[in-house]
Length: 311
Image 1: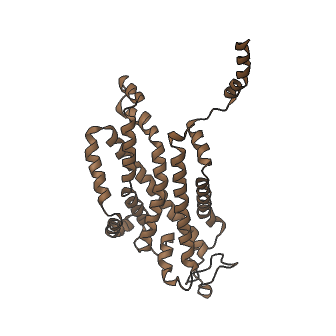
Image 2 (image 1 turned 120 degrees about the vertical axis):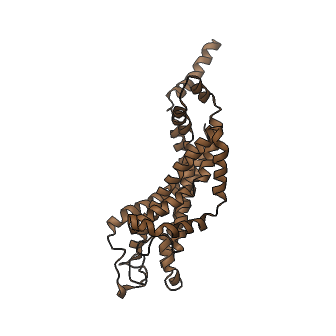
């Protein structure tokens, strides 16, 4: 009778466990990410900014280059929601176009940095013969002053790429390549540490014992297991790339004057900040919101992908 009563008492618990919906690893990550309020706030803000910059010019069809001297330096109003600059150009249209370029630079430069950093980190962590040379090279790159080096490279190769690829595409390729190839070092070090931990695991040793090629081990076993730190590093890399591009444009060495970016708008309107505060307020606000929302998303992804928090 005692055994029977115990079985009856445990039946609802067994049924609840058996009917509970099974969650995958990424499903569990998404569940914990949704509980991070700041990460959700950052995601919503970033989606609004991306939707506005990429879809907004299709809805708000005012030309960002149309000059109307008679309506110069107007405050925000019904005809011009964010006002006009000293030449009468619509500030909202210029910020929407500039945001599209700034976000594109950040995303593409992040992809360049992630690919290069992941490649260096995996090779350094898995192959002992390459570890010391690659890490010393990484330390050398970290020791270089990034912003002065960026300025020198852009000044040396800007005119050449403009002649080859055109005015806008040439400077876009140059800025993306320089920012990406000078921002891969933190990713490489994170990936290397993860690979050093992974290659001692039992499933890697089992793959070696059954004769799996090293390329197969790296592609099928190592790379999928380092995606979590790569994704977290990528979110922070986008923010760093946007901030670097804004600094270059603010110094006058980024995109040309007829290509508005958020940093370029700050550079062009810095002389009017006392008379027309909104000219620098809006691009500065958009840059700050983008950087802040991406950092919140990075924090949320880091907490969601932490295996110690998985239940």
